[in-house]
Amino acid sequence: MVQRGQQKMATKRRLLWIGDAGVNTGFARCTHEILKELAPKFDVHVLALGYDGDSGHGLPWPIYRASAGGDPLGIGRVANLVSKLGPTVVVIQNDPWNFPLYLKQAGNSTVVGVVAVDGKNCRGTLMNGLASAIFWTKFGEEQARLGGYSGQSAVVPLGVDTDIYYPQQKAQVRERMNLPAILQTRGLPADTFIVGVVGRKQQRKRLDLTLEYFAEWIHAYEVPDAALWVQQAPTGERAYDLEQLGRYYKISDRLIMPAPVSDQQGVPEQVMARVYNVFDAMISTTQGEGWGLPQMEGMACGVPQIVPRWSALEEWATAAMLVSCSSTAATPQAVNVIGGIADRRLFCVALDQMYRNKDVRAQHVADGLQLVKRPEYRWPSIGKSMLTAIDQAIFQQPVDTQKQQEQPA
Image (cartoon, rainbow, N blue to C red; front, side, top):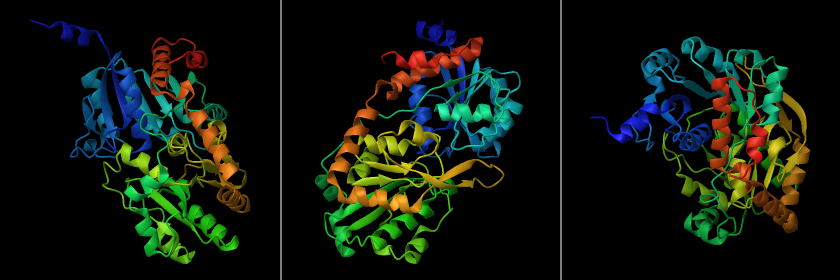
């Protein structure tokens, strides 16, 4: 006899989500939060990129390990899963250049892309074939259109959980993290000005420039009491040897680099919130971001930000101190996305102003907290907009997510 709950489940439309899951990455954070909101409407299944299949993922949906098909993107599993599950819609969260690989395997399925566009010169033509493309920013949508994307599209932002990320007592957090003792071993005072950076050690993040600009600042401006805390994501990239660069720039005694906890789980969010609360200021020298979740999480913790005036950060991170880009760089390996390079002199000026002027810091803190509390940055509101965009892709209706986002969550 079929139970009532089973009947209800059988009537749900099925969604196959392909993207980072069960691992500690920004993409995975998006997967987890958005699927919480979509799950009441869909029977959710996840082809989980980055998940090793061994560590507990803690997610309430069926999870399929992507690399079991022989590649980290899970391309080898797509056709079989589509045939097995018969999804109403396949949603793929990835970079523009990877969509042709998935579309080839998805057959006649309705495929929606959640697309990370982190710079100019986006190859939008590679996404033609999607039922719809959902972008996190208007910048991303515009660049995809300029690059030849001609299909249906929507813009749905990302968000932050302010029940996890919020300002805490800095002195208490630093004591709990044993920071005064760490600083003492380096001959630095307990109230050292901590500049933080959070991200993956991949080429696009340009952590080499982070070290270079920080070194330029403390040497040229004769700053005796500042340190750089580099919180690396546990995703295994080897783009830069930061310890060796620290020695080259003569800042080894100013460089704090906690080791990632594990390649899969990384730092729990509650611990990560404490890390943000250690910082006096937070910086990024990235070539470009599809969104920039660490900057949003840092703002929610009351940390003032210095970021390049480029891509997504230029669009949404208006509470940050934005530094103009004086040059550009292309992403290698034939990706060719054009990123912006924040001007070194202006970046050092911004760092020094943030360091010396408490009023400037306070204003950016207040502006940041006000920004991240906007209703469109709550995950339930984001999930509602995502549901609207996905439904309109399924039924091929015109998309107006702006009206959806203006409604209260």
